[in-house]
Image (tube, rainbow over all chains, first blue to last red; front, side):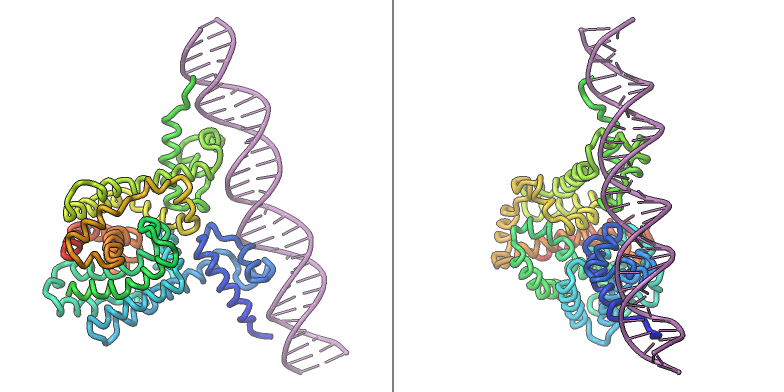
Length: 199
Length: 199
DNA sequence: CTTTGAATTAACCAACTGGTTAATTTATGA
DNA sequence: TCATAAATTAACCAGTTGGTTAATTCAAAG
């Protein structure tokens, strides 16, 4: 046999993702990942030579998932309103599938910002130039310095924060889990409308 | 001597805060906290019987700091526009002082949402009723279900997220640390203006 | 069938970590 | 000054954790 078994490796990665997402690098235990993957702990080091390397794989994958679709949207051919709508829709649905993803990235990047530069070259990062230009064309207000940056920050913040802060926000708003999920679903339309009104 | 020495205890708490904020409960090391506080590791267990208890103290303090001023503002006597302005100003400056505070709370609450209920009774949580009523009075739009909740979520998100996601956002916006700090300072006015425009 | 390398396991290990203990020093009030 | 309790330390301990190793099973090619 020449090639490594992919199914076991994939199972490890899937399980490791959920564990790392929830507990972070320092809180995750190799033993738990092995147990959940249904394998011996030594197998982890057979497929991934160290916890650090397993984590790196998971983290880069997570970063790709988080940033991946965004670039395509923002660099796409669509007109500005459609782009905004697409971004909000994409981010909302992606975070609905994996709510812990955002908190994971925020937490790990806070401790080790250099993980961003390590394997992620600038070229793979999102290029905002098109988006900035479209904003400037739509309204002269966005020709002012940092105006486009604020708009982008607003767009991301409005989509991501309520997912990040679910435990706190749902409590403050006195909504149970089902109500909050509904609230998050409503937001896609709400955010789009708010942002388009700013053009 | 009847009373415990407060200065050592306070020094421990100050140091423990910075370490827990940065590394979280599982990533923090009692030895490191002791070293930074300039004391023996056994002294930590003299003032705080366990890591868990030291962490709880830090966490409750952090939660109080994060939510503390907000309640006063939202339950205050000011008119709605002034309240909004006060909230944005307070949150912005508080997070400028301790940027890691928000990520710390988000991360720990994600793993253990029950920490919110443990020692924090509902009474100490913020009461949104006044704020909701003021919104409804300002614009009939906010009488619709969840409209006030969305407004509140927007307000918090716009203030907090850019601090939470600094490593990621500053990179995407291609701003160095000084530029990003300036960007965050600008946001207070920007956010207030945006929110007031929604009334 | 047998050879060969991948897949897998049980047992083990050294370093780390939170926590304890017994002894010592320091401050204080009577 | 002396007794007493607080403050502090060094040494130690047991459980955990990431990681290794040597041996075994499994699957496929010849």
